Image (cartoon, rainbow, N blue to C red; front, side):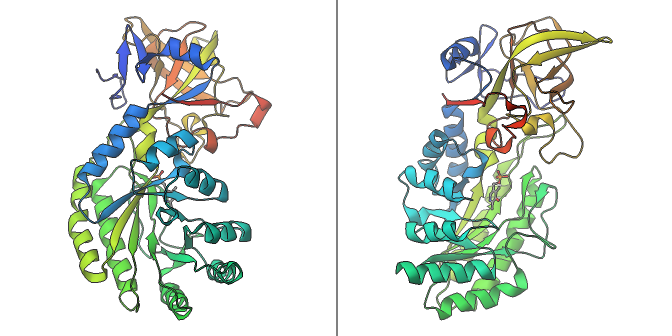
Length: 411
Ligand SMILES: *Cc1c(COP(=O)(O)O)cnc(C)c1O
């Protein structure tokens, strides 16, 4: 198994190359494309997802559970695979909840966060017996009403908007004025209200941000989150069962990004988990989406034309931003940078040149690679975008310009 090298990006590890072709799940790309039947498609490697989750879980100290946040990749086959490799699933909509429950995972291992839960979703969650992570006073009252109406004790947790920020995060989701969670100062009143209803609070949830590649920043956020969570739990008569401190582990996408070293981050959890067990007889939860699936997936598109304009080469493909908004640079990026992109059926080819890869949409935003050095390609070749296992089709505007939807396979 050789790493696939790039001039500027971190090498891609884990995939096999057979006769100059990328292989996924042991299948050469051209054969996989034939078996899928059409391009473009996303292919996720079962083996690589398993390796990631198993490796990470092996490094977790006792008293720390690993959850999968399924919005990163809600393909049912992927969620089913990860249900068996993690301690729980985190969902963010009624539909994600159904996908999670279809895996057969016990409802008390599923939790539901989100700032805009509808009454119907709250009812569904209470009826299912999953844990509702409440993000406002209104959600609490609706959950209590749903419990009374259905004759079920709702399982309730509170999402806290902490006063600290996660440094170095791609997307900040805590600290300062935020639509997520309940401001730290208002949490004790809500926790007391839950106990006054005769219910035990399941736990506190803190989620400070996403796509972080800095181990020191993550360690600091974990420490602050546990400190705050335990302080909030201290006055409760019935304590809590868990403290979910989020995750935010990132993956290297762009030139210069270095893979996150998870070892120190997970080691730093050991004393925090001990403290949480001692103080509150509770366990810690980390919830990861992207980190578990991003590197296991590729997006594959076929070159349908090769054009030159004023000295620049454009490979026009059948895939683009309507399937893979993030790779086009339009999903939260401030400055557009290239994902690791290559020609999947010409890996290691001596002849290389600078080419741009574009999609079929009539917009300059539909750009998958901007002037990258890669194997010189022709019509019918297969462009591969790596690091594509998370926030792909479900995070893209598939209806824009009315092209066919992408296909997903788990191999
Ligand atoms: C999006 C989200 C996650 C997953 O984030 P990743 O960056 O994919 O790991 C986890 N928890 C919550 C609450 C989220 O909103």
